[in-house]
Length: 94
Image (cartoon, rainbow, N blue to C red; front, side, top):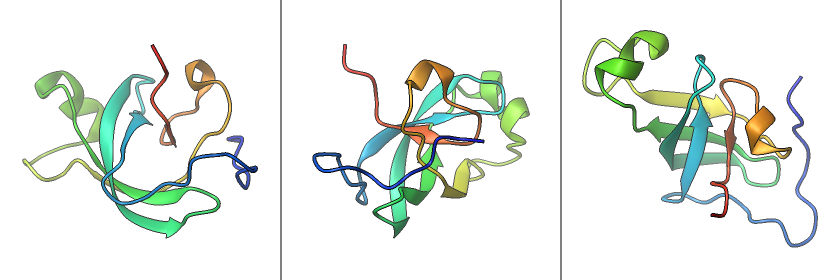
């Protein structure tokens, strides 16, 4: 079960337009933009995922150019390297 919890003081609250990382069913991480925030405190959002074209389309079941939308995606608050599939997290600092 994903480590989904309410953010603590100082945590960034998701908002529309922010870039995040979505964990695909294959385990690969891809950039995504938040397009709807359902629950800012828990991090439940809708995302538009930017895939690596045909390399990712099969794993997401994409059949058309606008099929990379994901709804009600929970935020993962743990280590991004161990994030479960179909969750999102803030990009790692590099």
